[in-house]
Length: 331
Image (cartoon, rainbow, N blue to C red):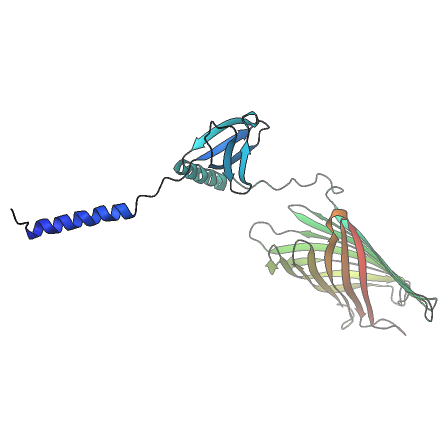
Protein backbone atom coordinates (compact mmCIF):
# COMPACT_ATOMS: atom_id res chain seq x y z
CA UNK A 1 0.00 0.00 0.00
CA UNK A 2 1.29 3.41 -0.94
CA UNK A 3 1.99 5.75 1.99
CA UNK A 4 0.43 9.25 1.52
CA UNK A 5 2.90 12.08 1.36
CA UNK A 6 2.72 15.16 3.58
CA UNK A 7 1.65 17.40 0.70
CA UNK A 8 -1.26 15.15 -0.22
CA UNK A 9 -2.43 15.11 3.41
CA UNK A 10 -2.47 18.95 3.49
CA UNK A 11 -4.43 19.13 0.23
CA UNK A 12 -7.00 16.63 1.48
CA UNK A 13 -7.38 18.55 4.78
CA UNK A 14 -8.00 21.85 3.02
CA UNK A 15 -10.53 20.27 0.67
CA UNK A 16 -12.34 18.63 3.58
CA UNK A 17 -12.50 21.87 5.49
CA UNK A 18 -13.95 23.64 2.48
CA UNK A 19 -16.55 20.94 2.02
CA UNK A 20 -17.45 21.05 5.70
CA UNK A 21 -17.81 24.83 5.69
CA UNK A 22 -20.06 24.78 2.65
CA UNK A 23 -22.25 22.19 4.33
CA UNK A 24 -22.57 24.26 7.50
CA UNK A 25 -23.27 27.68 5.87
CA UNK A 26 -25.21 27.25 2.65
CA UNK A 27 -25.54 30.28 0.39
CA UNK A 28 -28.41 32.63 1.36
CA UNK A 29 -31.62 32.26 -0.60
CA UNK A 30 -32.37 34.91 -3.19
CA UNK A 31 -34.54 37.80 -1.92
CA UNK A 32 -38.23 37.53 -2.72
CA UNK A 33 -39.61 39.12 -5.84
CA UNK A 34 -41.51 42.39 -5.70
CA UNK A 35 -44.66 43.25 -7.59
CA UNK A 36 -46.17 46.50 -8.83
CA UNK A 37 -49.95 46.04 -8.90
CA UNK A 38 -52.21 48.41 -10.82
CA UNK A 39 -55.78 48.17 -9.57
CA UNK A 40 -58.87 48.58 -11.67
CA UNK A 41 -59.56 52.02 -10.11
CA UNK A 42 -56.11 53.29 -11.15
CA UNK A 43 -54.35 52.97 -7.77
CA UNK A 44 -50.82 51.56 -7.83
CA UNK A 45 -49.32 49.50 -4.98
CA UNK A 46 -45.83 48.04 -4.64
CA UNK A 47 -44.74 45.34 -2.21
CA UNK A 48 -43.09 41.96 -1.72
CA UNK A 49 -44.90 39.27 -3.68
CA UNK A 50 -46.29 36.60 -1.32
CA UNK A 51 -48.45 34.57 -3.72
CA UNK A 52 -47.97 33.64 -7.33
CA UNK A 53 -48.62 36.53 -9.73
CA UNK A 54 -51.32 34.34 -11.35
CA UNK A 55 -53.01 33.39 -8.07
CA UNK A 56 -56.49 34.49 -7.06
CA UNK A 57 -56.25 36.36 -4.83
CA UNK A 58 -52.88 38.00 -5.40
CA UNK A 59 -51.13 38.67 -2.07
CA UNK A 60 -48.35 41.20 -1.42
CA UNK A 61 -46.67 42.47 1.71
CA UNK A 62 -46.97 46.27 1.60
CA UNK A 63 -44.39 48.31 3.65
CA UNK A 64 -47.19 50.34 5.30
CA UNK A 65 -50.44 48.40 4.89
CA UNK A 66 -48.92 45.04 5.72
CA UNK A 67 -50.14 41.90 3.97
CA UNK A 68 -53.00 42.70 1.60
CA UNK A 69 -54.78 40.62 -1.03
CA UNK A 70 -56.69 41.50 -4.18
CA UNK A 71 -59.08 39.42 -6.24
CA UNK A 72 -58.46 39.03 -9.95
CA UNK A 73 -61.42 41.32 -10.70
CA UNK A 74 -59.79 44.12 -8.71
CA UNK A 75 -56.45 43.95 -10.52
CA UNK A 76 -55.74 45.54 -13.87
CA UNK A 77 -52.11 44.41 -14.23
CA UNK A 78 -49.25 42.84 -12.27
CA UNK A 79 -45.58 43.55 -12.99
CA UNK A 80 -43.09 41.29 -11.21
CA UNK A 81 -39.52 42.45 -10.52
CA UNK A 82 -36.61 40.75 -8.83
CA UNK A 83 -35.25 42.47 -5.72
CA UNK A 84 -32.20 43.62 -7.69
CA UNK A 85 -34.36 45.18 -10.42
CA UNK A 86 -36.64 46.73 -7.77
CA UNK A 87 -33.63 48.35 -6.08
CA UNK A 88 -32.43 49.73 -9.39
CA UNK A 89 -35.92 51.08 -10.11
CA UNK A 90 -36.08 52.80 -6.71
CA UNK A 91 -32.62 54.34 -7.18
CA UNK A 92 -33.54 55.58 -10.67
CA UNK A 93 -36.75 57.13 -9.31
CA UNK A 94 -34.81 58.87 -6.52
CA UNK A 95 -32.24 60.23 -8.96
CA UNK A 96 -34.98 61.49 -11.26
CA UNK A 97 -36.80 63.16 -8.34
CA UNK A 98 -33.58 64.90 -7.26
CA UNK A 99 -33.24 66.44 -10.72
CA UNK A 100 -36.75 67.90 -10.70
CA UNK A 101 -36.48 71.66 -10.07
CA UNK A 102 -38.54 73.12 -7.19
CA UNK A 103 -41.92 74.55 -8.20
CA UNK A 104 -41.85 78.24 -9.11
CA UNK A 105 -43.20 80.70 -6.53
CA UNK A 106 -46.82 81.78 -7.00
CA UNK A 107 -47.23 84.79 -9.28
CA UNK A 108 -47.49 88.21 -7.68
CA UNK A 109 -50.97 89.74 -7.37
CA UNK A 110 -51.86 91.82 -10.39
CA UNK A 111 -53.54 94.56 -8.36
CA UNK A 112 -52.62 96.30 -5.09
CA UNK A 113 -56.04 95.31 -3.76
CA UNK A 114 -55.33 91.58 -4.26
CA UNK A 115 -53.31 89.22 -2.09
CA UNK A 116 -54.15 90.66 1.32
CA UNK A 117 -54.27 88.46 4.43
CA UNK A 118 -55.20 89.57 7.91
CA UNK A 119 -57.04 89.21 11.18
CA UNK A 120 -59.79 90.90 13.15
CA UNK A 121 -59.50 90.80 16.95
CA UNK A 122 -61.59 91.80 19.95
CA UNK A 123 -60.88 91.82 23.69
CA UNK A 124 -63.34 92.83 26.39
CA UNK A 125 -62.95 92.94 30.18
CA UNK A 126 -65.36 94.30 32.77
CA UNK A 127 -66.44 94.25 36.40
CA UNK A 128 -69.62 95.21 38.21
CA UNK A 129 -70.25 95.45 41.96
CA UNK A 130 -68.03 97.33 44.38
CA UNK A 131 -66.23 98.74 41.35
CA UNK A 132 -67.49 99.44 37.86
CA UNK A 133 -64.99 99.21 35.05
CA UNK A 134 -64.89 98.25 31.40
CA UNK A 135 -61.97 97.72 29.05
CA UNK A 136 -62.34 97.23 25.31
CA UNK A 137 -59.69 96.71 22.63
CA UNK A 138 -60.39 96.05 18.96
CA UNK A 139 -57.89 95.63 16.18
CA UNK A 140 -57.46 94.84 12.50
CA UNK A 141 -54.18 93.68 10.97
CA UNK A 142 -53.45 93.31 7.24
CA UNK A 143 -50.41 92.07 5.34
CA UNK A 144 -49.64 91.72 1.64
CA UNK A 145 -46.38 90.17 0.46
CA UNK A 146 -45.00 89.80 -3.05
CA UNK A 147 -41.59 88.85 -4.41
CA UNK A 148 -40.60 92.54 -4.24
CA UNK A 149 -42.47 94.13 -1.34
CA UNK A 150 -44.17 93.53 1.99
CA UNK A 151 -46.97 95.88 3.04
CA UNK A 152 -48.54 95.89 6.50
CA UNK A 153 -51.43 97.94 7.83
CA UNK A 154 -53.16 98.01 11.17
CA UNK A 155 -55.88 99.69 13.21
CA UNK A 156 -56.20 99.55 17.01
CA UNK A 157 -58.86 101.14 19.24
CA UNK A 158 -58.81 101.21 23.06
CA UNK A 159 -61.68 102.31 25.30
CA UNK A 160 -61.98 102.03 29.08
CA UNK A 161 -64.11 103.32 31.95
CA UNK A 162 -63.40 103.32 35.69
CA UNK A 163 -66.37 103.69 38.07
CA UNK A 164 -68.38 105.04 35.20
CA UNK A 165 -65.82 107.67 34.16
CA UNK A 166 -64.01 107.35 30.87
CA UNK A 167 -60.33 106.55 31.44
CA UNK A 168 -59.11 105.68 27.93
CA UNK A 169 -60.22 106.58 24.44
CA UNK A 170 -57.55 106.31 21.75
CA UNK A 171 -56.94 104.86 18.31
CA UNK A 172 -54.04 104.40 15.91
CA UNK A 173 -53.80 103.63 12.19
CA UNK A 174 -50.48 102.42 10.74
CA UNK A 175 -49.23 101.52 7.29
CA UNK A 176 -45.73 100.47 6.25
CA UNK A 177 -44.17 99.23 3.02
CA UNK A 178 -40.83 97.38 2.87
CA UNK A 179 -38.92 96.67 -0.33
CA UNK A 180 -37.58 93.17 0.22
CA UNK A 181 -33.90 92.31 -0.38
CA UNK A 182 -33.05 90.89 -3.78
CA UNK A 183 -30.26 88.43 -4.53
CA UNK A 184 -27.62 88.32 -1.80
CA UNK A 185 -28.54 91.73 -0.39
CA UNK A 186 -29.86 92.13 3.17
CA UNK A 187 -30.84 95.81 2.91
CA UNK A 188 -34.54 96.59 3.18
CA UNK A 189 -35.74 100.16 2.41
CA UNK A 190 -39.09 101.19 3.91
CA UNK A 191 -41.62 103.99 4.26
CA UNK A 192 -44.26 104.24 6.99
CA UNK A 193 -46.98 106.54 8.27
CA UNK A 194 -49.27 106.69 11.30
CA UNK A 195 -52.30 108.69 12.46
CA UNK A 196 -53.13 108.72 16.19
CA UNK A 197 -56.13 109.93 18.16
CA UNK A 198 -56.11 110.24 21.97
CA UNK A 199 -58.61 112.12 24.12
CA UNK A 200 -56.29 112.01 27.13
CA UNK A 201 -53.23 113.67 25.58
CA UNK A 202 -52.20 117.28 25.14
CA UNK A 203 -53.25 116.91 21.49
CA UNK A 204 -56.25 115.45 19.70
CA UNK A 205 -54.53 114.01 16.64
CA UNK A 206 -50.91 113.33 15.68
CA UNK A 207 -49.63 112.48 12.22
CA UNK A 208 -46.17 111.05 11.56
CA UNK A 209 -44.37 109.73 8.49
CA UNK A 210 -40.84 108.44 7.92
CA UNK A 211 -38.63 106.62 5.47
CA UNK A 212 -35.35 104.82 5.84
CA UNK A 213 -33.59 101.50 5.50
CA UNK A 214 -33.45 98.28 7.48
CA UNK A 215 -30.93 95.45 7.54
CA UNK A 216 -31.88 91.78 7.93
CA UNK A 217 -29.36 90.99 10.67
CA UNK A 218 -30.94 87.54 11.14
CA UNK A 219 -33.32 86.03 8.59
CA UNK A 220 -34.23 82.33 8.79
CA UNK A 221 -37.40 80.28 8.44
CA UNK A 222 -37.95 80.67 12.20
CA UNK A 223 -36.49 84.05 13.15
CA UNK A 224 -36.24 87.63 11.90
CA UNK A 225 -34.16 90.40 13.50
CA UNK A 226 -34.46 93.66 11.58
CA UNK A 227 -32.93 96.92 12.90
CA UNK A 228 -34.07 100.07 11.07
CA UNK A 229 -33.03 103.72 10.82
CA UNK A 230 -34.65 106.64 9.04
CA UNK A 231 -35.85 110.21 9.11
CA UNK A 232 -39.34 111.70 9.02
CA UNK A 233 -41.72 114.35 10.23
CA UNK A 234 -44.64 114.69 12.66
CA UNK A 235 -47.36 117.18 13.54
CA UNK A 236 -49.80 117.43 16.45
CA UNK A 237 -53.27 118.90 15.98
CA UNK A 238 -55.45 120.35 18.74
CA UNK A 239 -52.66 120.79 21.29
CA UNK A 240 -50.20 123.39 22.52
CA UNK A 241 -47.62 122.56 19.80
CA UNK A 242 -49.10 122.49 16.32
CA UNK A 243 -45.98 122.92 14.17
CA UNK A 244 -44.24 120.36 11.98
CA UNK A 245 -41.17 118.66 13.48
CA UNK A 246 -38.27 116.82 11.83
CA UNK A 247 -37.61 113.47 13.51
CA UNK A 248 -34.92 110.83 13.42
CA UNK A 249 -36.19 107.24 13.60
CA UNK A 250 -34.43 104.25 15.17
CA UNK A 251 -36.41 101.00 15.31
CA UNK A 252 -36.13 97.24 15.49
CA UNK A 253 -38.42 94.30 14.63
CA UNK A 254 -38.09 90.80 16.06
CA UNK A 255 -40.14 87.70 15.34
CA UNK A 256 -39.61 84.07 16.37
CA UNK A 257 -41.75 81.24 15.01
CA UNK A 258 -42.04 78.69 17.81
CA UNK A 259 -43.93 76.13 15.70
CA UNK A 260 -46.57 76.03 12.98
CA UNK A 261 -49.22 77.34 15.39
CA UNK A 262 -47.47 79.90 17.60
CA UNK A 263 -45.03 82.79 17.44
CA UNK A 264 -43.46 85.52 19.57
CA UNK A 265 -43.13 89.06 18.24
CA UNK A 266 -41.67 92.35 19.45
CA UNK A 267 -41.11 95.75 17.89
CA UNK A 268 -39.91 99.16 18.97
CA UNK A 269 -39.72 102.62 17.40
CA UNK A 270 -38.02 105.69 18.85
CA UNK A 271 -38.67 109.14 17.39
CA UNK A 272 -36.07 111.85 18.13
CA UNK A 273 -37.06 115.48 17.51
CA UNK A 274 -34.05 116.84 15.62
CA UNK A 275 -35.29 120.42 15.89
CA UNK A 276 -36.08 120.14 19.61
CA UNK A 277 -33.32 118.00 21.15
CA UNK A 278 -33.52 116.07 23.52
CA UNK A 279 -37.29 115.46 23.20
CA UNK A 280 -38.22 112.00 21.98
CA UNK A 281 -41.05 109.43 21.85
CA UNK A 282 -41.10 105.64 22.15
CA UNK A 283 -43.63 103.12 20.88
CA UNK A 284 -42.85 99.62 22.21
CA UNK A 285 -44.91 96.45 21.81
CA UNK A 286 -44.46 92.70 22.29
CA UNK A 287 -46.72 89.69 22.33
CA UNK A 288 -47.40 86.01 21.85
CA UNK A 289 -49.86 84.56 19.34
CA UNK A 290 -51.16 80.99 19.12
CA UNK A 291 -53.67 79.36 16.78
CA UNK A 292 -56.26 77.86 19.13
CA UNK A 293 -58.60 76.38 16.50
CA UNK A 294 -57.18 75.90 12.98
CA UNK A 295 -60.52 74.63 11.66
CA UNK A 296 -62.22 77.97 12.41
CA UNK A 297 -59.08 80.17 11.96
CA UNK A 298 -59.27 81.47 15.54
CA UNK A 299 -56.14 82.59 17.36
CA UNK A 300 -55.36 84.09 20.76
CA UNK A 301 -53.02 87.08 21.01
CA UNK A 302 -51.51 88.22 24.32
CA UNK A 303 -49.46 91.40 24.38
CA UNK A 304 -48.19 94.55 26.01
CA UNK A 305 -47.74 98.03 24.60
CA UNK A 306 -46.09 101.17 25.95
CA UNK A 307 -46.17 104.71 24.59
CA UNK A 308 -43.62 107.06 26.13
CA UNK A 309 -43.29 110.82 25.58
CA UNK A 310 -40.43 112.74 27.18
CA UNK A 311 -42.51 115.96 27.01
CA UNK A 312 -46.17 114.96 27.33
CA UNK A 313 -47.48 118.38 28.32
CA UNK A 314 -48.87 119.78 31.55
CA UNK A 315 -50.54 117.30 33.91
CA UNK A 316 -49.85 114.39 31.55
CA UNK A 317 -47.98 111.18 32.32
CA UNK A 318 -44.98 110.18 30.26
CA UNK A 319 -45.90 106.48 30.06
CA UNK A 320 -49.12 105.08 28.66
CA UNK A 321 -48.95 101.32 29.31
CA UNK A 322 -51.48 98.79 27.95
CA UNK A 323 -51.71 95.01 28.22
CA UNK A 324 -54.29 93.01 26.30
CA UNK A 325 -55.71 89.65 25.27
CA UNK A 326 -57.46 89.39 21.92
CA UNK A 327 -59.39 86.59 20.28
CA UNK A 328 -58.78 87.00 16.55
CA UNK A 329 -60.29 85.61 13.38
CA UNK A 330 -57.74 85.12 10.60
CA UNK A 331 -58.67 85.47 6.95
